[in-house]
Amino acid sequence: MTAWLDGAKSECNSGTDTLRQTYKVVGAIDPNDMQVSPVGFDKAGYIHRSQQLTYTVRFQNVGNHPAADVVIVDSLPAGLDMSTFKVVQSSHKMTGLVVNGHRVEFRFENIFLPDSVSNNEGSIGHIMFSLMPNTNIAAGTALKNKAAIYFDHYEPIITNEVLNTIQSARQEQSLIEVRTWPNPAMDVVYISLQHKRGKFTRKNIRQVDFVDMNGKIVLTRLFAPTDEQRINLPQTMNGFYLLRITDSDGGMYTHKIFIRKTM
Image (cartoon, rainbow, N blue to C red; front, side, top):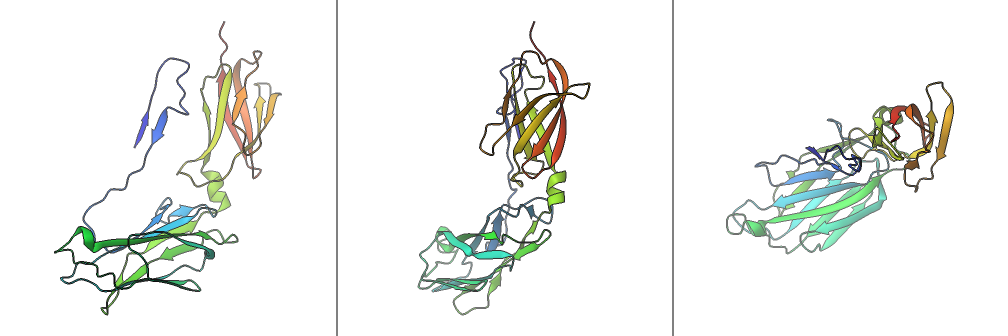
């Protein structure tokens, strides 16, 4: 869902007056499940290699008697860096956490989790944890994850499987687009590089060249990673220009802009 503010006044800034939100459509489902954030884009759940993954395992006792113990076992994908593993949040106090290689066991002993019939709200719990992909993870690596939930001595309940895939540099480059505002510009222009599918890039602008219709570079601006990507336009600039943009990885982009000076 996208909403924006539009108007004829020059101070209307499309860079700050546009809001895009993504909502998950929910319904009645098996209460014992796994979720991952970010979910990534496309069916493969593509993410950037430097993005942290946060997993949430939800459990609910839908039986007819309290569960004395709940144990969650997760054999995490080999492409994740276990040295970055950390528990983010837990609905109940854990009595044990065992990490053996990529196998993690969360123990809730003497939890006496009520059943959903006698206490629906009290029958629900969750564990949330996060970690990073390996720094040298290869593009195209699929990170599949699911967990087993044990209530007392019963057979485990296996959650759904979530999937993330590391996007390639070529794939990332093809989905980067240049945005400028306002356009037409007058005295100042803001420039940004954005991934078309969300926050799946760490690229930033290193250099911007303004090229006139004769192919001559009339203005060049260099940027540090922390700089505001804003350019003050000289009074002598007027008309159409081609922006030639270089990103922090050496990628090149072009973008047209019209500069209109008031009389």
